Image 1 (cartoon, rainbow, N blue to C red):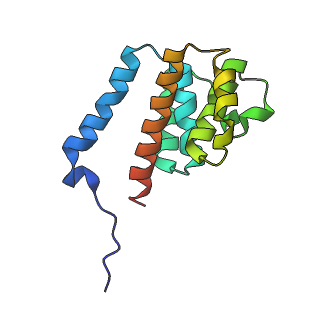
Image 2: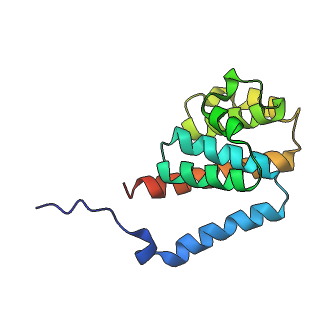
Amino acid sequence: MKNIQAIKHEQHIPDILQAMGQVHSVIDGHGLDRTLYHLVLLRASQINQCDYCIEMHTREAKEDGESIERLNCVKDWYKYDVFSPQEKAAFSWTEILTNLDELSRLGELRAELRQHFTDKEISLLTVNIAMINLWNRIRISEH
């Protein structure tokens, strides 16, 4: 009989997971806007279908003052006027770095991002998106 039970990563590599978790406090130290922080984490988690992360980031966003109405619009953000042009640019960046299926648009999206963000802020968004994709994959592996 095959053992198909999920691996409990916290039991086997707690030091690695703890080190990964510390990256978020370093990102916070650089001043990435908390609203953007939550929105991109939630959107990437939706794309990756990580229910654990969707629930956690929705809760954290609400705790930081985000409205449930806006959070309910994140999945189809491009259909709603509740998001600023800056937030919409961040969503586009999140989607391209999560799906990796339209990489030919990277330059175009970087130009759009630069209308709303400094290069440092784009770097912070990028690392934030990369980290949530890593976390999503770890959590999904436990399903």
